[in-house]
Image (cartoon, rainbow, N blue to C red; front, side, top):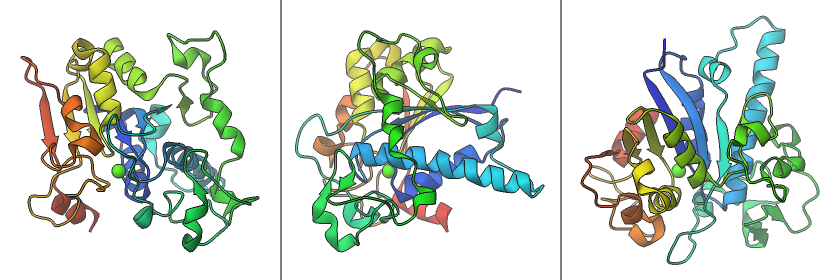
Length: 284
Ligand SMILES: [Ca+2]
């Protein structure tokens, strides 16, 4: 039976996003297919966020092996049924300055799990290459993928891929795309029937803005856009430094690129905003 929901998760992992992705991957194949994780800056620099996504699968693979060797129920059935794609996206907003949420999520976006130094040393972080000055090894090497993960996403000269799955280096649990995330979003929408794919946006909306700007007709093939944003009953996530993509899709627009991601159109495209209060209730 086809999954009830086939989704693209546009994400900036990030502690909370990692939990959300874990829940999606642990769903049954009948409930959810995670087709693509399109990564953006946000909770940390984009390269840190990509490393966290790769690390997530790295840890899941180890966990599945551990459970398998002990004859335990493995779980993660959706992940085993549908290998997701990871694509690297925007490094910064289309306009305005880059603001990250490392004050909450830690310098590496995961509370320092990849770091060798304390959170007090975050000033030494070089966000874009995701290393710390003097870094030689991590505090938790079993949770950190080998640095060679960066080569997974490198585009070789002359290898502009029309089918990234054919040219991407693959691990056992995900496919690393060599396309930019917004192009991968468009490819997925283009190659699937209209109104079958839901985009779940839980980071800044820059990847969506880039996709809509490049090919609006294809972007509007999306069934629905669900945005983790807004604050109807909750405090917080209202400023331009918010880690949440949209507060009414306008208040932090320059940081999130929300208007560009939701362009005016004659087609009625469903967009759902999930209030911060609902998120906290769901986690609780
Ligand atoms: Ca997020």
